[in-house]
Image (cartoon, rainbow, N blue to C red):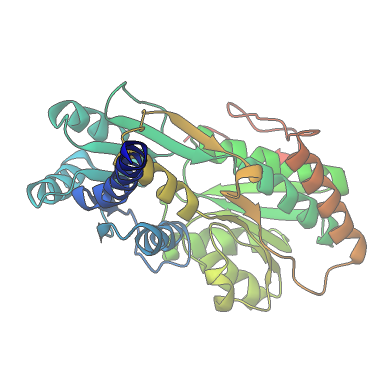
Length: 335
């Protein structure tokens, strides 16, 4: 009888621990700060879809503020307002929030700060996260090199920082593999989300004879310009923007932030969180290449599948070059 009573206590304790772990999510509120609109069809929308997935799977209360410039004062104003409302997890989703988030992590030790695309962290409440986007960038380069007729590929890019340069070079390596004669010309816009600047850059590239455009931008403006000119378009971030230029859209290196957001919030809630520099590859599902449009040659699809398998298996990884452009890229890494 006593043994049965003891076993019952153990089972009750296990259930209490389990329920306590689930209920502990209620002790947290997560705020997301976006540099662009939450429905931009690109970067910020990808994060917001991840936020929605987080809510669906954990039930945590969340909020977001969009169109917050990469300015320390602007970010601080938004983040401190959330902290005053009881939000104790802050996700900053663009590179330019890096330094102010580092400062605020020291000032607010009871708040968890998680910065996307940066490189700084501490040992208590400040971590960073990103993905190996250069992997699907390389795959999309294979496609671009195979489909260009003019051997001129344009690339509309935001800022000459390592993240962007790394992606351009991986893309160009893919181009080189399928078309050694093709070049990739880069035009900088110096904005993450600026449809007018993106359109101007895209048109400048089209005027040089580019018949395929790629991008590291947050809006579908590049694709709209490509479609108007009868060119092809390799998008970025999500496939949500493809409807803006369906005739030009070929594929896109895309993000799926949901699983990361769920995992890190659950680790915070159950007490196992340790700040880290998370960098997930294609094997995690964080980054991938969206399905190819149906009018591509079968050989292109086969090559992409083969290289995808090599990356996923660890047999191959595209080279990482962040301080200069590889030899088939036209442009400069200097502002």
